[in-house]
Length: 286
Image 1 (cartoon, rainbow, N blue to C red):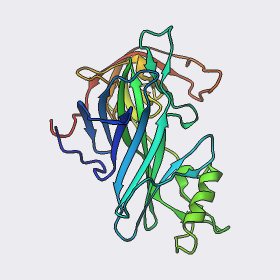
Image 2: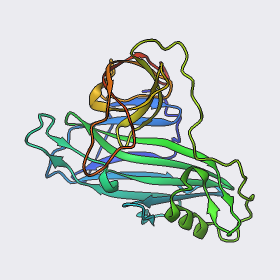
Image 3: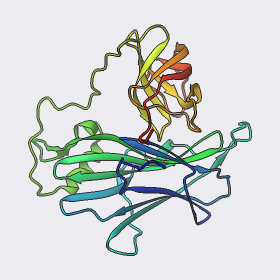
Image 4: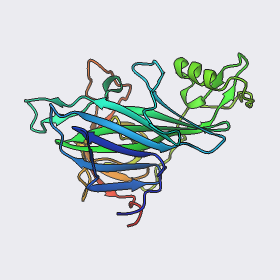
């Protein structure tokens, strides 16, 4: 197995009925890692567990739950002072109408939690999750946002990429009382960088981002349209998990209005259907 290079100190595992599931297959990227842990069925006691050595001086690590927009710090279950251990019980669902059988879902933070790593004024936001596709389960961790934090004119600590999340602003402000931070610059933005896909023709698109937790991503096609893509509409050769990495290129059968979930409306105007990857970013060690 290739050496894990993305935050190897953050060890993510699944416990099923109290036993740790050793990964059978791993997919490793500079900003994410995914490990196949087999099948889990409804009735099994499934738990997501994260183990982290206590960080060096000047680095702070926090695990948080975010049901809705609320931000709540998780309990450290470690038995010794040199380690941090965070756990989350995961509900395994079953839909008798689906051949895939058992699955987890991200609604309300049900299948994941977040890790915040603060080094001075620099913040890394990592999501750890237990996900499933076609009855197969995977644990993953992914760096989803990073950047500097600032103090605004009201003495609040602002992370620009979460500037529209007041509960997160309140949480960070409470963590960093008395810390000297740069004032909020006028040009700070939570927008994604502009992407101009090159050499795209016809029904092809380039990946902007992919969420392991939500199992959806955003791509941009040759006409500059940004569209949502769900794992069920994606084929990834040689992988037990359908997912994308930034800058990977797909070919698709159709782009159209997105399917709407009454419980969770999407803001995307377009959705991709019938996609397969035609340019793969190789995994570490290949």
